[in-house]
Image (tube, rainbow, N blue to C red):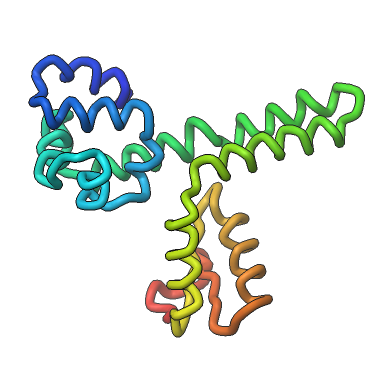
Length: 173
């Protein structure tokens, strides 16, 4: 499903509150992927129920399905391994290969910094610090990032575990 196209199709039939949600979604889709419906509603100025009704208007079963759809689009479309690989191959044929690759990585880091709020980051750090155990899971494209995160967190605290789907039982911790 092309989410932006679907939103544009249903937009005329939406309520005023749902139109606010639709406009926010078109500009800030990444926020939907990581924010609860309650907090999102508060940020937009609508009720949690309005957000859920908006999801229904898109033909979805609810907010969780919308989040899943957005997460998949973010993972597979905007930062796909093929796109990353292609950009590195393209840079390999250019002069100053290393500078080209690092420049592309800087752009990715800056984009991440713009989309990451200090409040969310601080809350995440606090929760990680307070946890008795941390279990990190990464599948397919995200496994190497999960492995890196596990290694990095183990440098600063104990009881950090990487779930390996090919060998570990789901009830690891």
